[in-house]
Image (cartoon, rainbow, N blue to C red; front, side):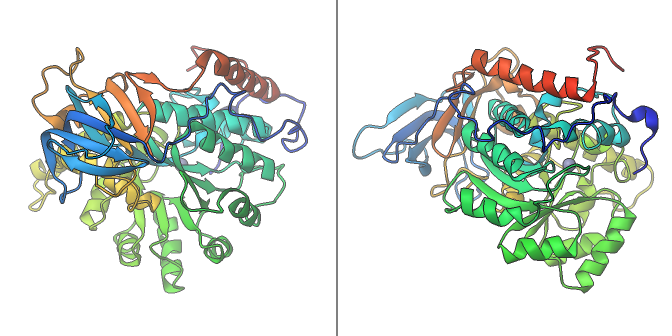
Length: 481
Ligand SMILES: [Zn+2]
């Protein structure tokens, strides 16, 4: 993409090599960052009692008032008046709350965390100039750590229990290590999709470094963080990922990408191990290829309209038209917030506007309007499929890991609660997220994050941001257009 000169951020004359300045240790101690280490008690028993349960699992169903028993890291039982033989569990009063599976954000560039809302009016040119062509080159491993950490903590606070971290600033092995360490330290469930930076200088250790990362961090699959590759449609990269048994995330949109996809189809390079981000403006044929190959798709309700991607509309309707149930993704926070509630609302309203528009303009076969359950499914179940984690999360099902969000319904904006799905999808907000549990560990309780020393962490965020601003010669203008 051609980027006009004035779209570039102000860059200082002292060109710095990101790799040369990465003197600080990539392994930041979680305690130093203000994070308490919370160890899961494998024998713990927690009973969430008397909440309205939206399980998103048809085999489990929903309950006006029900209980969820957590044993260790897993959901042991869901139902009314769940029996708890044996030692008494810790009981958490879930009355006046709605229990849902944790939200899953299928596509987030977590490293950009310290750049929150720096370009609220940005389009794709401005985004690229600010991130890939701008600040990215100055990132130290430490900045990767801080960016990933605050993104992950913001997600947990908002009830997003799982993210696919599309980490396209892997400038050195130490940068990848730091990004991963932050995900582990935060307590979020994450798929780290390791990708290369888009601008020199960098160590060119990627993609071969994926093998080292796998050995160092992923000796077991039985952990919250897993690994995959982030790559465009690239034969060599795809081969490298598959040799290591890694899934792939590819982000693309438009007719040119659709043509390349067709070539990949003919070469038998497409498969169910690929997740596609964005997907706006694709041809019908490209959608068929994605479906026939078993690929998963996440659409970007805010990102696509914000940055002017694809054909301008999130690809939600196209996905549905081609028999694909997509996940949702926030993409980044450089222009807007970390909020799955808003993503659900935007996609709900755009789809209904689109369906109505087709009907009133004489379309004999307009799409049906989606409902709130369809949209919550995108934010949970379909997201788990994109993450390759359907066996572990996405629904409140016995045997799955306990990734659970409790939403308060007795707050000023939600009381009285007359419809559970409507409350969650069409009305609730981050402030109503009372409790967040990930893999059986309570990360937020009573509306407060657990184990995060915010006053200790904040100066470290400031240091990272100030360092990046200074290296890039960027003058903060809080009212910039
Ligand atoms: Zn993206």
